[in-house]
Image 1: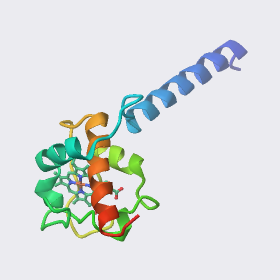
Image 2 (image 1 turned 180 degrees about the vertical axis):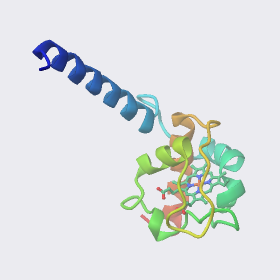
Image 3 (image 1 turned 180 degrees about the horizontal axis):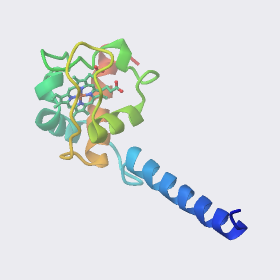
Length: 126
Ligand code: HEC
């Protein structure tokens, strides 16, 4: 029979590891950051355009962002953080997986997302 103490220690360990896993999965930009589409453009060109195209319409390696499936209600800003940091298993399009990109920080992704949202709004996707 496990003592109540053992049970409490195991529960605490489980909670702690769960919290760590969450912190790793859902990266958050710095508090107070103002996402800036102009900063995002440069970061996007460098890190994302090779597969999602400079004009965000996609190419033979990745899907377009100017597309209803990536409008905010379907793919909220968290989806961009998760995709850029953890990568994406191919599920929606006939492309390869998107590899995780350790090159971008959560702040970078917030700027990139602001840039993508600006273009989506211009195209009437919101
Ligand atoms: C090496 C190619 C490649 C690069 C570079 C790349 N992506 Fe992707 N991305 C993909 C592919 C392929 C998919 C589609 C996966 C699927 O749904 O089948 C995708 C999907 C996504 C999605 C949708 C995720 C979801 O939840 O369905 C987001 C968001 C995204 N990319 C953001 C980014 C951002 C931001 C960058 C730059 C930091 C980036 N990608 C760079 C290939 C790439």
